[in-house]
Length: 337
Image (cartoon, rainbow, N blue to C red):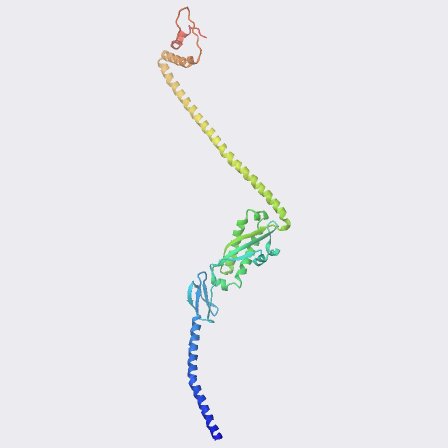
């Protein structure tokens, strides 16, 4: 019985396992299909990407640029590894230091002399530290034209700064040419970056520190104090000149105007006297006696009121004579004093 029973149970177990496998296999096949569909959907969905407002997307297909102007918003690309997207920030203002390192300043370390010291045109040494502000102007060139465009900005600014400072004297650099140096360094740096085609635009260059070496700082301070005194004296003199000159010009103008008025008055008076004399001569030629008498009377009218007069008659009881009525012939017979 045992042998017979054993021989019968083994085939039954084999049949049951085979049936179980055959029943489960269709389920696994369905699950694999569903998993493959889900994986394919996720793989295709990975091509979606979003460009932020301060970014611009650059899409490459196997390293070749196919779209360098993806604007802010949602876009689609072929999933990796077919296509890849880079999104540099084009509106962000970046900063690069020249003459020092920001990390050293944060740590409180002084800048290295070989970085900050520059030789001027008159063979003096000066310490200059400046900051260069720039941004990405062309994302495609920024990503692929240069290996490290950020450090290229530093090298270009250092080269331009050395050239500009080497053409000026130390006094000009410390005083009147600061703003001109900043503008010239900005223009020169931007020209070098444009020549390399790295897609960067320089916004501004600003001095952080410009000073002589500490070993000769006292001498430069004395020179600076003397220069300030000179400027103060010059400004005071200019102020005094500005105060005196307008007043002197006004007085001179007043004198000229008075002289001109006096000249016109004398000329017009002379013309009037000449015209009056010519007219009087014409009347005199017509009526000599009458004209002579009238002139005498008019002269007496002007002279006698300003004189103290005494009248002496020939005898007692004679009335006082009125000299205004005397004729030239009659006046000769009357003594007066």
